[in-house]
Image 1 (cartoon, rainbow, N blue to C red):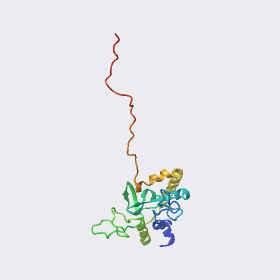
Image 2 (image 1 turned 45 degrees about the vertical axis):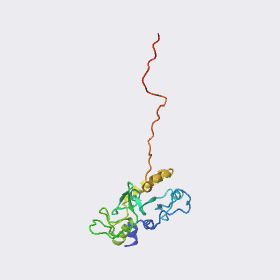
Image 3 (image 1 turned 180 degrees about the vertical axis):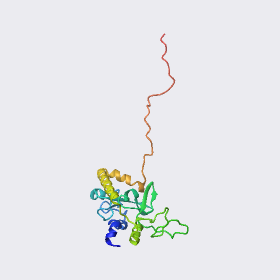
Image 4 (image 1 turned 90 degrees about the vertical axis):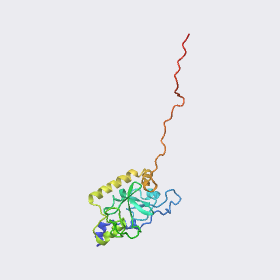
Length: 215
């Protein structure tokens, strides 16, 4: 497969994403509360970085957040489908969020009677998909050339508009936005107690008494 065709089917930042090590402690913000490097910039195509690096160095860039499930890296479908055609990749629902895995996961050889398996690594799948992860789809593209990560023109324009609008609207409120993004890994936190309206302690109900009649 030629270089030009590879470029069309696979975005230039994807292989770097799949080979990046996430969840290390940020060297710059090691003492901060949210110092784990779980974000990746599609425009810079560099190393993983933390929440504070995003605010200071990648504020107007296209950034996706990586999560963890059973010690494996996952990304939410709602984020990645804006920039990639993820058709053919098995998705999962974890903590009420639909996600997919970045790379292949070790698994014993699939036994007999398995209906669906990954075309690349042979992992058993829940549904009739072709690949278990983005990494296996990438290998399938290199091997067979019958799949693609490229979005069509109309969807790509919509994706760029949506990403730009989201980035602009959250630049001032990035803290609240990132708290929402952490729902997959940490679980959403809700109020556990309902506020009870205060009662009037001075008002007491009882048997009414009439004033005595004047003699």
